[in-house]
Amino acid sequence: MKALLWTGINETSVEEVPDPQVQNPEDMIVRVRRTVTCGSDLHLLGGYIPFMQKGDVLGHEFMGEVVEVGPDVRRHQVGDRVVVCSFISCGRCWYCKNELFSLCDNGNTNPGITEALWGANPGGCFGYSHAMGGFAGSHAEYVRVPYADVGAFRVPDGVSDERALFASDSASTGWMGADLGNVRPGDVVAVWGAGAVGQMAARAAMLLGAERVILIDRFDYRLRSAEQHVGCETLNYERVEVVEELRERSGGRGPDVCIEAVGMEAHSPSAVHAYDQVKQQLRMQTDRPTAVRQAIYNCRKGGTVFVLGVFAGLVDKFPLGAVMNKGLTLRSAQMHGQRYIPMLLERMERGELVTEHLATHTMPLTDGPRGYTMFKEKQDENIRSVFLPGG
Amino acid sequence: MSTSQKKILSAAAVGAAAVAAARTVADRTSNAADEDVTRWRVVTVNRPLDDVVAGTPAPLADLGDAVEVRVHAAPGDKGSELWARWRDGADLPDDQDPAQVLRRALRGSKQLLEVGWVLEPGRHTTTEDTVLNAPLRKAISTARGAGLL
Ligand SMILES: NC(=O)c1ccc[n+]([C@@H]2O[C@H](COP(=O)([O-])OP(=O)(O)OC[C@H]3O[C@@H](n4cnc5c(N)ncnc54)[C@H](O)[C@@H]3O)[C@@H](O)[C@H]2O)c1
Ligand SMILES: [Zn+2]
Ligand SMILES: [Zn+2]
Image (cartoon, rainbow over all chains, first blue to last red; front, side):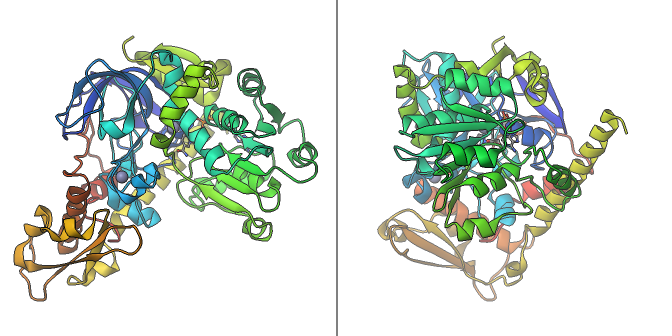
Protein backbone atom coordinates (compact mmCIF):
# COMPACT_ATOMS: atom_id res chain seq x y z
CA MET A 1 0.00 0.00 0.00
CA LYS A 2 0.97 3.66 -0.27
CA ALA A 3 1.91 5.57 2.87
CA LEU A 4 3.39 8.94 3.81
CA LEU A 5 6.69 8.32 5.57
CA TRP A 6 8.96 10.40 7.76
CA THR A 7 12.30 10.16 6.02
CA GLY A 8 14.36 12.69 7.97
CA ILE A 9 14.15 16.09 9.62
CA ASN A 10 11.66 18.15 7.58
CA GLU A 11 11.52 15.38 4.95
CA THR A 12 8.58 13.18 4.03
CA SER A 13 7.82 11.00 1.05
CA VAL A 14 5.04 8.75 -0.22
CA GLU A 15 6.23 5.20 -0.78
CA GLU A 16 5.05 1.60 -1.00
CA VAL A 17 5.07 -0.29 2.33
CA PRO A 18 3.63 -3.69 3.36
CA ASP A 19 -0.11 -3.77 4.22
CA PRO A 20 -0.86 -3.98 7.96
CA GLN A 21 -2.29 -7.20 9.39
CA VAL A 22 -4.46 -8.27 12.30
CA GLN A 23 -1.87 -9.23 14.93
CA ASN A 24 -3.95 -9.40 18.14
CA PRO A 25 -7.52 -10.72 18.59
CA GLU A 26 -8.99 -7.24 19.18
CA ASP A 27 -7.25 -5.60 16.21
CA MET A 28 -9.06 -4.43 13.15
CA ILE A 29 -7.93 -3.07 9.83
CA VAL A 30 -9.40 0.22 8.66
CA ARG A 31 -9.27 1.48 5.10
CA VAL A 32 -8.47 5.13 5.67
CA ARG A 33 -10.89 7.55 4.00
CA ARG A 34 -9.56 10.77 5.49
CA THR A 35 -6.44 11.50 7.50
CA VAL A 36 -5.21 14.93 8.54
CA THR A 37 -2.05 16.78 9.53
CA CYS A 38 -1.81 17.87 13.19
CA GLY A 39 0.35 20.45 14.95
CA SER A 40 1.85 17.51 16.85
CA ASP A 41 3.30 16.19 13.59
CA LEU A 42 5.27 19.42 13.16
CA HIS A 43 7.17 18.62 16.36
CA LEU A 44 8.05 15.21 14.86
CA LEU A 45 8.90 16.63 11.46
CA GLY A 46 11.21 19.21 12.96
CA GLY A 47 13.04 16.53 14.95
CA TYR A 48 11.94 17.92 18.33
CA ILE A 49 10.68 14.49 19.39
CA PRO A 50 13.76 12.50 18.48
CA PHE A 51 12.34 8.99 18.38
CA MET A 52 11.48 8.68 14.70
CA GLN A 53 13.10 6.21 12.35
CA LYS A 54 13.43 6.75 8.64
CA GLY A 55 10.42 4.99 7.10
CA ASP A 56 7.94 5.48 9.96
CA VAL A 57 4.38 6.14 8.74
CA LEU A 58 3.03 9.50 10.01
CA GLY A 59 -0.53 10.45 10.93
CA HIS A 60 -2.85 9.92 13.91
CA GLU A 61 -6.11 11.78 13.21
CA PHE A 62 -8.29 9.75 10.84
CA MET A 63 -11.52 8.03 9.92
CA GLY A 64 -12.36 5.26 7.51
CA GLU A 65 -14.10 2.00 6.81
CA VAL A 66 -13.60 -1.32 8.59
CA VAL A 67 -12.29 -3.97 6.18
CA GLU A 68 -11.21 -6.75 8.57
CA VAL A 69 -11.90 -7.54 12.23
CA GLY A 70 -9.98 -9.79 14.62
CA PRO A 71 -11.86 -12.70 16.28
CA ASP A 72 -12.53 -10.82 19.55
CA VAL A 73 -13.81 -7.54 18.09
CA ARG A 74 -17.44 -7.17 19.23
CA ARG A 75 -18.58 -3.65 18.48
CA HIS A 76 -17.51 -3.37 14.84
CA GLN A 77 -18.21 -5.11 11.58
CA VAL A 78 -16.72 -5.03 8.14
CA GLY A 79 -18.22 -2.07 6.31
CA ASP A 80 -18.70 0.15 9.41
CA ARG A 81 -17.76 3.79 9.00
CA VAL A 82 -15.62 4.64 12.02
CA VAL A 83 -13.60 7.44 13.55
CA VAL A 84 -10.60 6.27 15.55
CA CYS A 85 -9.09 7.91 18.62
CA SER A 86 -5.46 8.95 18.10
CA PHE A 87 -4.39 7.29 21.37
CA ILE A 88 -4.26 3.51 21.74
CA SER A 89 -5.74 2.33 25.05
CA CYS A 90 -6.77 -1.06 26.46
CA GLY A 91 -9.93 -0.02 28.29
CA ARG A 92 -9.15 -2.32 31.21
CA CYS A 93 -6.20 -0.97 33.21
CA TRP A 94 -6.72 1.33 36.19
CA TYR A 95 -6.07 4.44 34.09
CA CYS A 96 -8.56 3.46 31.40
CA LYS A 97 -11.16 2.56 34.04
CA ASN A 98 -10.68 6.06 35.42
CA GLU A 99 -11.12 7.57 31.93
CA LEU A 100 -7.49 8.68 31.75
CA PHE A 101 -7.15 6.83 28.47
CA SER A 102 -3.92 8.41 27.20
CA LEU A 103 -2.21 7.13 30.35
CA CYS A 104 -3.11 3.51 29.54
CA ASP A 105 -0.66 0.98 30.98
CA ASN A 106 -1.11 -1.43 28.07
CA GLY A 107 -1.08 0.77 24.98
CA ASN A 108 2.62 1.48 24.53
CA THR A 109 4.78 -1.41 23.36
CA ASN A 110 8.00 0.48 24.16
CA PRO A 111 7.41 1.39 27.81
CA GLY A 112 11.10 1.59 28.66
CA ILE A 113 11.75 4.68 26.53
CA THR A 114 9.29 7.01 28.22
CA GLU A 115 9.88 5.48 31.65
CA ALA A 116 13.51 6.53 31.27
CA LEU A 117 12.52 10.00 29.97
CA TRP A 118 9.60 10.90 32.21
CA GLY A 119 9.53 8.34 35.01
CA ALA A 120 6.46 6.52 33.64
CA ASN A 121 5.00 5.62 30.28
CA PRO A 122 1.85 7.07 28.71
CA GLY A 123 -0.24 4.98 26.29
CA GLY A 124 0.52 4.40 22.63
CA CYS A 125 -0.38 6.68 19.74
CA PHE A 126 -0.67 6.10 15.99
CA GLY A 127 2.24 7.47 13.96
CA TYR A 128 3.81 9.24 16.89
CA SER A 129 7.35 7.93 17.19
CA HIS A 130 8.85 4.94 18.94
CA ALA A 131 8.53 6.70 22.28
CA MET A 132 4.75 6.30 21.87
CA GLY A 133 4.94 2.66 20.78
CA GLY A 134 6.14 2.96 17.20
CA PHE A 135 2.68 2.18 15.75
CA ALA A 136 2.31 2.84 12.03
CA GLY A 137 0.32 6.02 11.40
CA SER A 138 -2.82 6.75 9.44
CA HIS A 139 -1.38 8.55 6.42
CA ALA A 140 -1.74 5.29 4.53
CA GLU A 141 -4.31 3.31 2.63
CA TYR A 142 -4.80 0.94 5.57
CA VAL A 143 -4.07 1.05 9.28
CA ARG A 144 -4.06 -1.55 12.06
CA VAL A 145 -6.27 -0.44 14.95
CA PRO A 146 -5.42 -2.28 18.19
CA TYR A 147 -8.10 -2.48 20.94
CA ALA A 148 -10.66 -1.69 18.25
CA ASP A 149 -13.67 -1.91 20.58
CA VAL A 150 -12.14 0.73 22.84
CA GLY A 151 -10.69 3.21 20.37
CA ALA A 152 -12.96 3.14 17.30
CA PHE A 153 -16.46 4.62 17.13
CA ARG A 154 -19.18 4.19 14.54
CA VAL A 155 -19.97 7.48 12.82
CA PRO A 156 -23.72 8.30 12.88
CA ASP A 157 -25.31 8.49 9.44
CA GLY A 158 -26.02 12.17 9.90
CA VAL A 159 -22.34 13.09 10.30
CA SER A 160 -20.22 13.46 7.15
CA ASP A 161 -16.69 12.06 6.78
CA GLU A 162 -15.41 15.64 6.63
CA ARG A 163 -16.89 16.52 10.00
CA ALA A 164 -16.34 13.23 11.84
CA LEU A 165 -12.62 13.21 11.00
CA PHE A 166 -11.81 15.84 13.63
CA ALA A 167 -13.48 13.92 16.47
CA SER A 168 -10.43 11.64 16.23
CA ASP A 169 -8.01 14.11 17.81
CA SER A 170 -8.41 17.89 17.60
CA ALA A 171 -12.03 18.18 18.76
CA SER A 172 -11.57 15.67 21.57
CA THR A 173 -8.32 17.34 22.64
CA GLY A 174 -9.95 20.76 22.67
CA TRP A 175 -12.91 19.42 24.64
CA MET A 176 -10.60 17.86 27.19
CA GLY A 177 -8.86 21.22 27.73
CA ALA A 178 -12.14 22.96 28.53
CA ASP A 179 -13.57 20.06 30.54
CA LEU A 180 -10.53 19.24 32.68
CA GLY A 181 -9.63 22.95 32.77
CA ASN A 182 -12.90 23.15 34.70
CA VAL A 183 -14.73 25.70 32.53
CA ARG A 184 -17.94 26.72 34.30
CA PRO A 185 -20.97 28.71 33.11
CA GLY A 186 -20.15 32.40 33.33
CA ASP A 187 -16.39 31.95 33.02
CA VAL A 188 -14.08 34.06 30.93
CA VAL A 189 -11.79 31.71 29.00
CA ALA A 190 -8.66 32.59 27.01
CA VAL A 191 -7.18 30.15 24.51
CA TRP A 192 -3.70 30.51 23.02
CA GLY A 193 -3.30 29.17 19.46
CA ALA A 194 -5.96 29.37 16.70
CA GLY A 195 -5.04 26.09 15.03
CA ALA A 196 -7.61 23.30 14.96
CA VAL A 197 -6.94 22.35 18.59
CA GLY A 198 -7.28 25.91 19.93
CA GLN A 199 -10.43 26.50 17.87
CA MET A 200 -11.99 23.31 19.18
CA ALA A 201 -11.04 24.21 22.76
CA ALA A 202 -12.71 27.60 22.28
CA ARG A 203 -15.87 25.95 20.91
CA ALA A 204 -15.93 23.50 23.82
CA ALA A 205 -15.64 26.35 26.33
CA MET A 206 -18.61 28.07 24.68
CA LEU A 207 -20.70 24.90 24.74
CA LEU A 208 -19.83 24.41 28.41
CA GLY A 209 -21.37 27.79 29.13
CA ALA A 210 -18.46 30.22 29.25
CA GLU A 211 -19.57 33.85 29.14
CA ARG A 212 -16.67 35.06 26.99
CA VAL A 213 -14.12 33.06 25.04
CA ILE A 214 -11.08 34.84 23.61
CA LEU A 215 -8.81 33.11 21.10
CA ILE A 216 -5.27 34.46 20.68
CA ASP A 217 -2.92 34.09 17.68
CA ARG A 218 -1.05 36.27 15.23
CA PHE A 219 -2.49 34.91 11.98
CA ASP A 220 -5.53 36.97 11.04
CA TYR A 221 -6.85 34.33 8.67
CA ARG A 222 -7.00 31.77 11.49
CA LEU A 223 -8.64 34.26 13.84
CA ARG A 224 -11.17 35.22 11.16
CA SER A 225 -11.95 31.55 10.59
CA ALA A 226 -12.63 31.10 14.31
CA GLU A 227 -14.83 34.22 14.52
CA GLN A 228 -16.87 32.94 11.62
CA HIS A 229 -17.17 29.23 12.39
CA VAL A 230 -16.61 28.95 16.14
CA GLY A 231 -18.19 32.24 17.12
CA CYS A 232 -15.64 33.27 19.74
CA GLU A 233 -13.85 36.59 20.26
CA THR A 234 -10.27 36.93 19.01
CA LEU A 235 -7.13 38.86 19.73
CA ASN A 236 -4.05 39.31 17.52
CA TYR A 237 -1.08 39.53 19.86
CA GLU A 238 1.03 41.33 17.27
CA ARG A 239 -1.38 44.24 17.27
CA VAL A 240 -2.67 44.49 20.82
CA GLU A 241 -1.11 44.06 24.25
CA VAL A 242 -2.42 40.72 25.48
CA VAL A 243 -2.05 41.53 29.18
CA GLU A 244 -4.04 44.76 29.09
CA GLU A 245 -6.61 43.46 26.66
CA LEU A 246 -7.36 40.30 28.65
CA ARG A 247 -7.65 42.33 31.85
CA GLU A 248 -10.09 44.68 30.19
CA ARG A 249 -12.19 41.86 28.76
CA SER A 250 -12.40 40.15 32.16
CA GLY A 251 -13.31 43.08 34.39
CA GLY A 252 -9.75 43.41 35.67
CA ARG A 253 -9.69 39.87 37.06
CA GLY A 254 -7.93 37.91 34.31
CA PRO A 255 -9.48 34.87 32.60
CA ASP A 256 -10.81 32.14 34.89
CA VAL A 257 -9.43 29.42 32.65
CA CYS A 258 -6.43 29.75 30.31
CA ILE A 259 -5.95 27.02 27.73
CA GLU A 260 -2.64 26.71 25.92
CA ALA A 261 -2.97 25.08 22.47
CA VAL A 262 0.38 26.05 20.96
CA GLY A 263 3.08 23.63 22.11
CA MET A 264 6.83 23.44 22.16
CA GLU A 265 7.55 25.49 19.04
CA ALA A 266 5.72 28.60 20.21
CA HIS A 267 6.47 31.94 18.61
CA SER A 268 7.16 35.05 20.64
CA PRO A 269 7.24 38.65 19.50
CA SER A 270 9.93 39.59 22.01
CA ALA A 271 13.68 39.14 22.37
CA VAL A 272 12.96 36.15 24.58
CA HIS A 273 12.13 34.25 21.37
CA ALA A 274 15.70 34.39 20.09
CA TYR A 275 16.91 33.37 23.53
CA ASP A 276 14.51 30.40 23.62
CA GLN A 277 15.37 29.34 20.09
CA VAL A 278 19.11 29.39 20.70
CA LYS A 279 18.76 27.50 23.95
CA GLN A 280 16.53 24.95 22.22
CA GLN A 281 19.01 24.46 19.40
CA LEU A 282 21.92 24.07 21.80
CA ARG A 283 19.82 21.50 23.64
CA MET A 284 19.93 23.59 26.83
CA GLN A 285 16.13 23.43 26.72
CA THR A 286 14.17 21.11 24.49
CA ASP A 287 10.95 23.11 24.28
CA ARG A 288 9.90 26.76 23.87
CA PRO A 289 7.14 27.49 26.38
CA THR A 290 6.17 31.04 25.38
CA ALA A 291 2.41 30.56 25.41
CA VAL A 292 2.51 28.58 28.66
CA ARG A 293 4.28 31.50 30.33
CA GLN A 294 1.66 33.90 29.01
CA ALA A 295 -1.24 31.71 30.09
CA ILE A 296 0.16 31.52 33.61
CA TYR A 297 0.88 35.23 33.80
CA ASN A 298 -2.58 36.26 32.58
CA CYS A 299 -4.71 33.77 34.52
CA ARG A 300 -6.79 35.16 37.38
CA LYS A 301 -5.92 34.29 40.99
CA GLY A 302 -7.09 30.79 41.80
CA GLY A 303 -7.76 30.03 38.12
CA THR A 304 -6.79 27.03 36.01
CA VAL A 305 -4.20 26.74 33.26
CA PHE A 306 -4.54 23.75 30.98
CA VAL A 307 -1.60 22.87 28.72
CA LEU A 308 -2.85 21.09 25.61
CA GLY A 309 0.22 21.89 23.52
CA VAL A 310 2.71 19.05 23.31
CA PHE A 311 5.96 19.33 25.24
CA ALA A 312 8.66 16.69 25.26
CA GLY A 313 11.33 17.66 27.73
CA LEU A 314 12.63 20.66 29.59
CA VAL A 315 11.60 24.30 29.52
CA ASP A 316 13.32 27.39 30.74
CA LYS A 317 12.05 30.45 32.60
CA PHE A 318 9.02 28.64 33.92
CA PRO A 319 7.06 31.14 36.06
CA LEU A 320 6.58 28.90 39.07
CA GLY A 321 6.35 31.97 41.31
CA ALA A 322 3.15 33.06 39.55
CA VAL A 323 1.68 29.55 39.77
CA MET A 324 2.42 29.38 43.49
CA ASN A 325 1.52 32.89 44.61
CA LYS A 326 -1.65 33.16 42.52
CA GLY A 327 -2.79 29.74 43.70
CA LEU A 328 -3.23 28.42 40.17
CA THR A 329 -4.19 24.90 39.19
CA LEU A 330 -1.93 23.70 36.38
CA ARG A 331 -3.14 20.67 34.44
CA SER A 332 -2.15 18.94 31.25
CA ALA A 333 -2.55 15.68 29.36
CA GLN A 334 -2.32 13.92 26.09
CA MET A 335 -5.88 13.50 24.90
CA HIS A 336 -8.28 11.11 26.63
CA GLY A 337 -10.33 10.93 23.44
CA GLN A 338 -12.30 7.75 24.19
CA ARG A 339 -13.98 9.71 26.96
CA TYR A 340 -15.41 12.35 24.62
CA ILE A 341 -15.75 10.99 21.07
CA PRO A 342 -19.29 9.50 21.35
CA MET A 343 -20.61 12.76 22.87
CA LEU A 344 -18.78 14.82 20.25
CA LEU A 345 -20.28 12.78 17.42
CA GLU A 346 -23.74 13.47 18.86
CA ARG A 347 -23.00 17.18 19.01
CA MET A 348 -21.69 17.01 15.46
CA GLU A 349 -24.93 15.38 14.37
CA ARG A 350 -26.95 18.13 16.07
CA GLY A 351 -24.84 20.76 14.34
CA GLU A 352 -23.44 22.20 17.60
CA LEU A 353 -19.93 21.33 16.62
CA VAL A 354 -18.76 22.02 13.09
CA THR A 355 -15.26 21.22 11.90
CA GLU A 356 -15.34 21.29 8.09
CA HIS A 357 -13.77 24.75 7.95
CA LEU A 358 -10.58 23.36 9.51
CA ALA A 359 -9.97 21.29 6.38
CA THR A 360 -8.74 24.21 4.30
CA HIS A 361 -6.88 21.96 1.85
CA THR A 362 -7.95 18.46 0.78
CA MET A 363 -5.74 16.45 -1.55
CA PRO A 364 -4.74 12.91 -2.52
CA LEU A 365 -2.27 11.24 -0.16
CA THR A 366 0.34 11.34 -2.91
CA ASP A 367 0.41 15.14 -2.43
CA GLY A 368 1.09 14.67 1.30
CA PRO A 369 4.59 16.21 1.33
CA ARG A 370 3.17 19.37 -0.28
CA GLY A 371 0.29 19.31 2.21
CA TYR A 372 2.75 19.29 5.10
CA THR A 373 4.73 22.17 3.66
CA MET A 374 1.55 24.23 3.27
CA PHE A 375 0.52 23.39 6.85
CA LYS A 376 3.90 24.11 8.37
CA GLU A 377 4.54 27.33 6.45
CA LYS A 378 0.88 28.45 6.74
CA GLN A 379 0.71 28.89 2.98
CA ASP A 380 -2.52 29.84 1.23
CA GLU A 381 -4.28 30.35 4.59
CA ASN A 382 -3.85 26.70 5.56
CA ILE A 383 -5.32 25.46 8.85
CA ARG A 384 -5.15 21.73 8.19
CA SER A 385 -4.28 19.58 5.13
CA VAL A 386 -6.55 16.56 4.74
CA PHE A 387 -5.30 13.57 2.73
CA LEU A 388 -7.43 11.11 0.78
CA PRO A 389 -5.54 7.80 0.53
CA GLY A 390 -8.15 6.60 -1.94
CA GLY A 391 -7.10 9.45 -4.28
CA MET B 1 23.69 33.91 6.43
CA SER B 2 20.95 33.01 3.92
CA THR B 3 17.62 31.65 5.13
CA SER B 4 18.38 28.22 3.67
CA GLN B 5 21.79 28.18 5.39
CA LYS B 6 20.08 29.06 8.65
CA LYS B 7 17.54 26.30 8.04
CA ILE B 8 20.27 23.75 7.41
CA LEU B 9 22.17 24.85 10.49
CA SER B 10 19.13 24.65 12.71
CA ALA B 11 18.15 21.26 11.24
CA ALA B 12 21.66 20.03 12.00
CA ALA B 13 21.44 21.32 15.56
CA VAL B 14 18.05 19.66 16.09
CA GLY B 15 19.43 16.47 14.50
CA ALA B 16 22.39 16.40 16.83
CA ALA B 17 20.06 16.96 19.76
CA ALA B 18 17.92 14.07 18.57
CA VAL B 19 20.83 11.66 18.46
CA ALA B 20 21.98 12.81 21.88
CA ALA B 21 18.51 12.33 23.41
CA ALA B 22 18.13 8.84 21.94
CA ARG B 23 21.57 7.98 23.26
CA THR B 24 20.59 9.20 26.73
CA VAL B 25 17.57 6.92 26.67
CA ALA B 26 19.62 4.02 25.29
CA ASP B 27 22.08 4.51 28.15
CA ARG B 28 19.29 4.69 30.67
CA THR B 29 17.69 1.44 29.53
CA SER B 30 19.58 -0.06 32.41
CA ASN B 31 19.68 1.81 35.68
CA ALA B 32 21.55 1.63 38.96
CA ALA B 33 18.97 -0.69 40.52
CA ASP B 34 19.65 -3.26 37.77
CA GLU B 35 22.93 -4.09 39.41
CA ASP B 36 21.02 -5.59 42.32
CA VAL B 37 19.75 -8.59 40.38
CA THR B 38 17.79 -10.15 43.24
CA ARG B 39 15.86 -6.95 44.05
CA TRP B 40 12.04 -7.29 44.21
CA ARG B 41 10.28 -5.74 41.21
CA VAL B 42 6.56 -5.03 41.19
CA VAL B 43 3.63 -4.18 38.94
CA THR B 44 0.11 -3.25 40.01
CA VAL B 45 -2.57 -5.22 38.22
CA ASN B 46 -6.11 -3.91 37.95
CA ARG B 47 -7.70 -7.23 38.98
CA PRO B 48 -9.06 -8.46 42.30
CA LEU B 49 -6.57 -10.42 44.40
CA ASP B 50 -8.46 -13.70 43.84
CA ASP B 51 -7.86 -13.52 40.09
CA VAL B 52 -4.16 -12.94 40.56
CA VAL B 53 -3.50 -15.65 43.15
CA ALA B 54 -5.40 -18.12 40.98
CA GLY B 55 -2.24 -18.87 39.02
CA THR B 56 1.12 -17.38 38.07
CA PRO B 57 0.78 -16.04 34.52
CA ALA B 58 2.84 -17.74 31.83
CA PRO B 59 5.61 -15.16 31.37
CA LEU B 60 6.52 -15.44 35.06
CA ALA B 61 5.78 -19.16 35.36
CA ASP B 62 8.14 -19.75 32.43
CA LEU B 63 11.03 -18.51 34.57
CA GLY B 64 10.35 -21.45 36.89
CA ASP B 65 11.89 -21.79 40.33
CA ALA B 66 14.53 -19.22 39.56
CA VAL B 67 12.07 -16.48 40.51
CA GLU B 68 10.15 -16.01 43.70
CA VAL B 69 6.63 -14.51 43.28
CA ARG B 70 4.50 -12.74 45.87
CA VAL B 71 1.02 -11.24 45.51
CA HIS B 72 -1.03 -8.95 47.71
CA ALA B 73 -3.88 -6.48 47.49
CA ALA B 74 -3.06 -2.95 46.40
CA PRO B 75 -4.41 -0.10 48.52
CA GLY B 76 -7.61 1.69 47.52
CA ASP B 77 -9.26 0.59 44.30
CA LYS B 78 -6.02 -0.24 42.54
CA GLY B 79 -6.29 -4.02 42.38
CA SER B 80 -3.37 -6.28 43.27
CA GLU B 81 0.38 -6.02 43.45
CA LEU B 82 2.40 -8.69 41.69
CA TRP B 83 5.96 -8.92 43.00
CA ALA B 84 8.85 -11.03 41.69
CA ARG B 85 12.59 -11.40 42.20
CA TRP B 86 15.41 -13.68 41.08
CA ARG B 87 16.15 -16.03 43.99
CA ASP B 88 19.58 -15.78 45.61
CA GLY B 89 21.91 -18.09 43.73
CA ALA B 90 19.33 -18.80 40.98
CA ASP B 91 20.48 -19.83 37.53
CA LEU B 92 20.32 -16.51 35.68
CA PRO B 93 19.86 -16.23 31.92
CA ASP B 94 23.37 -15.78 30.54
CA ASP B 95 22.43 -14.45 27.10
CA GLN B 96 20.19 -11.62 28.37
CA ASP B 97 20.15 -9.00 31.09
CA PRO B 98 18.26 -10.67 34.00
CA ALA B 99 16.69 -7.38 35.10
CA GLN B 100 15.25 -6.92 31.61
CA VAL B 101 14.00 -10.49 31.47
CA LEU B 102 12.13 -10.05 34.75
CA ARG B 103 10.66 -6.68 33.77
CA ARG B 104 9.37 -8.11 30.50
CA ALA B 105 7.84 -11.05 32.37
CA LEU B 106 6.13 -8.77 34.89
CA ARG B 107 4.77 -6.43 32.23
CA GLY B 108 3.59 -9.37 30.14
CA SER B 109 1.91 -10.97 33.17
CA LYS B 110 0.11 -7.75 34.02
CA GLN B 111 -1.20 -7.47 30.47
CA LEU B 112 -2.31 -11.09 30.39
CA LEU B 113 -4.23 -10.58 33.62
CA GLU B 114 -5.77 -7.26 32.60
CA VAL B 115 -6.35 -7.80 28.88
CA GLY B 116 -5.94 -11.52 28.20
CA TRP B 117 -3.10 -11.24 25.68
CA VAL B 118 -0.02 -9.10 25.09
CA LEU B 119 -0.16 -6.24 22.58
CA GLU B 120 2.18 -6.86 19.67
CA PRO B 121 4.24 -3.96 18.40
CA GLY B 122 3.49 -2.85 14.85
CA ARG B 123 5.56 -4.43 12.14
CA HIS B 124 8.08 -1.97 10.89
CA THR B 125 7.51 -0.57 7.47
CA THR B 126 10.87 0.38 6.07
CA THR B 127 13.96 1.34 7.95
CA GLU B 128 17.64 1.54 7.36
CA ASP B 129 20.31 0.72 9.89
CA THR B 130 22.73 3.62 10.06
CA VAL B 131 25.32 4.79 12.57
CA LEU B 132 23.10 7.78 13.36
CA ASN B 133 20.06 5.72 14.26
CA ALA B 134 21.99 3.04 16.16
CA PRO B 135 21.19 4.52 19.62
CA LEU B 136 17.48 4.69 18.80
CA ARG B 137 17.48 1.13 17.41
CA LYS B 138 19.08 -0.04 20.63
CA ALA B 139 16.53 1.86 22.74
CA ILE B 140 13.66 0.30 20.74
CA SER B 141 15.02 -3.24 20.85
CA THR B 142 15.30 -3.18 24.63
CA ALA B 143 12.26 -0.99 25.36
CA ARG B 144 10.02 -3.78 26.65
CA GLY B 145 12.53 -4.79 29.27
CA ALA B 146 13.89 -1.34 30.05
CA GLY B 147 12.71 1.34 32.44
CA LEU B 148 12.43 1.86 36.16
CA LEU B 149 10.29 -1.09 37.18
N1 LIG C 1 -2.77 17.15 24.22
C1 LIG C 1 -2.97 16.45 23.15
O1 LIG C 1 -3.33 15.28 23.21
C2 LIG C 1 -2.80 17.08 21.81
C3 LIG C 1 -3.53 16.60 20.71
C4 LIG C 1 -3.40 17.27 19.49
C5 LIG C 1 -2.55 18.34 19.38
N2 LIG C 1 -1.85 18.76 20.48
C6 LIG C 1 -0.94 19.91 20.44
O2 LIG C 1 -1.71 21.10 20.40
C7 LIG C 1 -0.92 22.13 19.79
C8 LIG C 1 -1.74 22.81 18.72
O3 LIG C 1 -2.07 21.91 17.67
P1 LIG C 1 -2.64 22.46 16.28
O4 LIG C 1 -2.84 21.30 15.40
O5 LIG C 1 -3.76 23.39 16.54
O6 LIG C 1 -1.33 23.25 15.79
P2 LIG C 1 -1.07 24.45 14.76
O7 LIG C 1 0.38 24.45 14.54
O8 LIG C 1 -1.99 24.37 13.59
O9 LIG C 1 -1.52 25.75 15.59
C9 LIG C 1 -0.73 26.35 16.57
C10 LIG C 1 -1.08 27.83 16.56
O10 LIG C 1 -0.41 28.47 17.65
C11 LIG C 1 -0.06 29.77 17.23
N3 LIG C 1 0.96 30.32 18.13
C12 LIG C 1 2.32 30.16 18.11
N4 LIG C 1 2.88 30.85 19.12
C13 LIG C 1 1.88 31.47 19.79
C14 LIG C 1 1.83 32.31 20.94
N5 LIG C 1 2.94 32.65 21.60
N6 LIG C 1 0.61 32.77 21.35
C15 LIG C 1 -0.53 32.43 20.70
N7 LIG C 1 -0.55 31.62 19.61
C16 LIG C 1 0.65 31.14 19.17
C17 LIG C 1 0.40 29.55 15.80
O11 LIG C 1 0.40 30.77 15.07
C18 LIG C 1 -0.64 28.56 15.29
O12 LIG C 1 -1.73 29.17 14.68
C19 LIG C 1 0.35 21.43 19.28
O13 LIG C 1 1.39 21.58 20.22
C20 LIG C 1 -0.06 19.99 19.23
O14 LIG C 1 1.06 19.16 19.37
C21 LIG C 1 -1.97 18.15 21.68
ZN1 LIG D 1 -2.81 15.38 17.02
ZN1 LIG E 1 -5.55 0.86 29.61
